[in-house]
Length: 273
Image 1 (tube, rainbow, N blue to C red):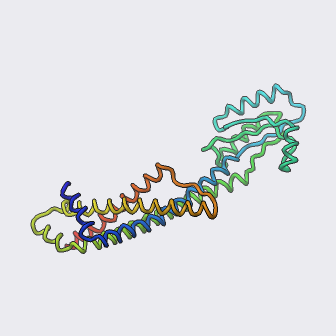
Image 2 (cartoon, rainbow, N blue to C red; image 1 turned 90 degrees about the horizontal axis):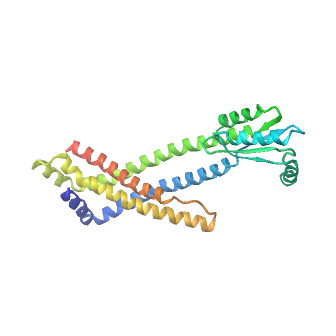
Image 3 (cartoon, helix red, strand yellow; image 1 turned 60 degrees about the horizontal axis):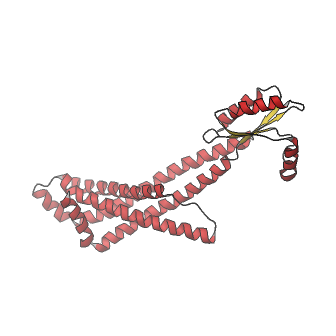
């Protein structure tokens, strides 16, 4: 293993221009992937902020006793899907109506916990609230919740498909750059084969080299993505950036993609030798 690491490091010294080209190519392919990830992250954050506004409003019959409303508040607040429940008096509802042109007789407003904001669950909570005799109507913007849930599902699916496409392109590009390094050492590989070197022994320096190039390319791509995010934040709008965990995972992903691309290229060459 020590010999493999030495050979991988020597590869950078033997062909510095090719190594720099490989790292740059990897960085820009991962940079494109990082920009897409940044867009997906901010779309997800925006959708989460919109989802936080999902709530159910129940309207009670005039003249309902305070004891009945208080008991209902306790019962509804105990629902596992409910995050909070609030009593809105007619005076408060009127004041809000003057500001927002909303309804005039709100009594209950219950926010829904994250993870329970899909249309089916929200409808189930609304149906349970309708079982109280003194509740006249229950509203939660059914059409709006369904559209929001549909948009979230479409964004998630599109993100997964485009993310896999970008990852596949990155693997192809990295594989091509490693292939160039393999072809440059084709004679050396043939000699190693003649003296009895195993495929694992021949393959290991290239795998390490691919992982190193992927890591360096991932770090450079992270820097480019951060620079782009800061530029957009300064001149357009402030966007959310990856947290430390996501940044580390991105660099690790670069190393894994480099490893995969190298494995594919070396394996193909060894089959041809």
